[in-house]
Image (tube, rainbow, N blue to C red):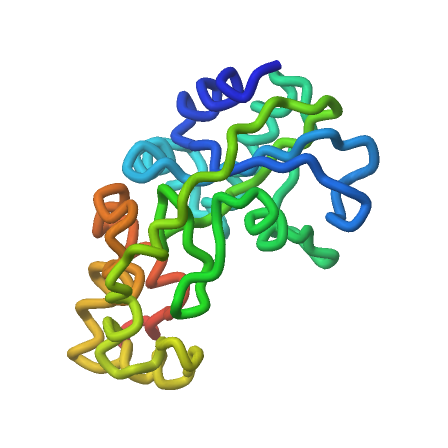
Length: 220
């Protein structure tokens, strides 16, 4: 099995390889794992696949997680791997630590995880654990090192800066008329990252913002 084969199979499902690692005893991988391959949404390709999936309109909760279970589970069976997921705990698998260990993602100036290709919109839908050691590419350069760091000043109310994240101030702002821009187009801080800015559409961002900050249903 080659990493390129995994990437091709993942791309057919609207997913992209977001990094990989050869876990050691300290990494919390299942016993017998030689390689963990992290899977991320592939921008609009992922969104289009999800919207066309049966989970999207069946009226049951958590359509994205259920889609991930089905699709990544099938990928794992086809490729001879074990499917792992960042949800369904406790216990929770250490996806953030795996992302850092892959050296494809690291801490952004605002403290969020940022990815070398996906920027601040990075997320992980699951991972494939292979028993063998797949060849992995060398880590890329970190774009943050040469970036003007617009993320530090992008939040309209200063809720997310290099000093930390004031989640209460964030939610309070999203309840205002001015907060509609973030609700409809995505977090201003995440949008400010020049890396991967073209990969995520506004409808996809609005869906995830509504999950993060649900608004009460209108009254009768």
